[in-house]
Image: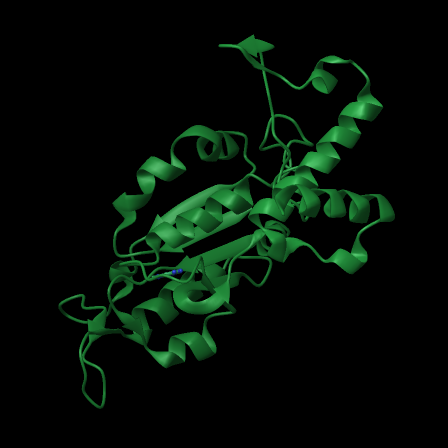
Amino acid sequence: MRINILSLFPEMFTGVLQHSIMKNAQDRGAVEFSVVNFRDYSTNKHNNVDDYPYGGGAGMVLTPQPIFDAVDDLSKDSTVKPRVILMCPQGVRYNQKKAEELANEEHLIFICGHYEGYDERIREHVVTDEISIGDYVLTGGELASMVIVDSVVRLLPGVLGNETSHKKDSFSTGYLEHPQYTRPSEFRGLKVPDVLLSGNHKLIDEWREKESLRRTFLRRPDLLVEEQLSDVKKKWLEEFRKERD
Ligand code: ADE
């Protein structure tokens, strides 16, 4: 996968893209990142990238020229049509399903504004997706794009050591992940549930499924569609409700 990020503050990305799993993913050739300062594309004699809004009002607006030219340049040697993603609080809310969708693409271009708004022609003619990472306003799209890049790249084949390790993540299954324990089996008198030490994998799988449902019911009931649950899961839900009430 190829990922280009357009930002006026490329240094913000070095910590995130050059460590841990993002670094390994690049070293293994699963992804190629480049962070581009779109000011470099400005044809304005002062290299300006923003201007006052027509009609007046507070704040500045990013002009179309540097962004149109940067996207044209980054797309020209691409064999596929890139997804061009504008980071903004007005976009569709990001989730794991969107991460999985983007992980199937070959080329992503992120556009990160900072303080400013975007000229509407950027939205209409360059951008394929507008994405928000949540209902709050950041000072810029940089942090938001890093969140998306991280969550997409970890899904690429070969990036996580264990091929199946993301398949049971919270949200991938539609439920939150079950509780996990490791050694020692008793710590300060606190014991690991017996079933996990039993070696009986059928019982362990059942316990995990039930605890995953319990955690989802208690923390994120909005993720549960009760009509779609098996009879066993419906019974477990009844049990959780009784315990709660
Ligand atoms: N830019 C500013 N706030 C944002 C948000 N919540 N999501 C994506 N981009 C943003």
